[in-house]
Length: 152
Image 1 (cartoon, rainbow, N blue to C red):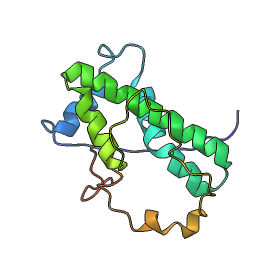
Image 2: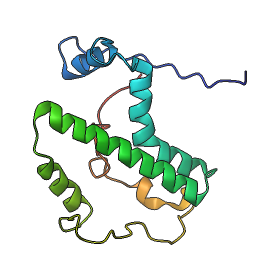
Image 3: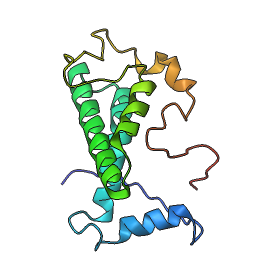
Image 4: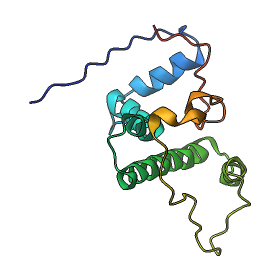
């Protein structure tokens, strides 16, 4: 077998914090018997970070990158639908947030699909200034915070 990337992470949130509760949920195999904790974490990371990681690496074709991104969007959308059902949130409210985020009026199924991604080439990773100067809350689809946390 080939070499493997070693990634070690230790995180110890306060025991009664929301983050500790989330990690306990991920570790509880009875709540999700068909996915272990590694699979759950990797599924979320793949959907959230894989397209940008591969884009930054510069090793993916435009077509492959688009497919990987759309797979991630589909995974996030399916997760959002699951959470809406579980905690009884009206999916229309979620749809309105997503539409406003992308500057779209509400999309109905009777309208023809619009191409949201232009056919222009992606800028090179090292010249993509928007990623260097982005506001974390704009890219924060999952409601996670990345600022002012330490991951030592």
